[in-house]
Image (cartoon, rainbow, N blue to C red):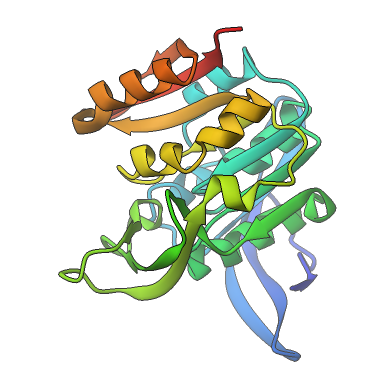
Length: 256
């Protein structure tokens, strides 16, 4: 649990002490807090690794995937965000600060990313509006493990059930189980490194019940199955944006 967020940073960029409380014992971590202006407001994001693909955008004074965030902003305002694969909180912080989102439920099973997420939420005064769950989503409850690609890409850490891959243990469950009591959602954002079909299967009852918009990164190998599945669930593509050669981001809306 974050005890204090920032202590006396001078200027727009510098080193700050982040105090945590782990198991009742105070611990100190040192990293870079980047402060920058977005949409006329001051934002602060914690950077643990300046070479990480997402964190280096924060270090430069910008949100990661701003084009995708702008796309979302044209279709979503207010309500509750469900952020599946929240990583360090780039989308969660942006949507709470600038899209009128009132509450976010952030699923992030990687403890390293989750720690940075918690700091970013605290830095922006959002702690009371974000519920973090240290689990991944899939189509069933099971044990799995985290497969990290390298120190420069925390966001590409994958959840895997394969015995041929190794990594830190984690728990996954279906979104229908995790969100059974959720009364409303304006957007479910899914970025799960090619696990989007499993995640969507585990959310079928939630999508049918709540009819939120859905923003999801889809691996090209899954695109046909994805479009077929979402059409069956009564969703259509409202917009899309391709940033990388191997996947595409889709914003979906319910047909009714």
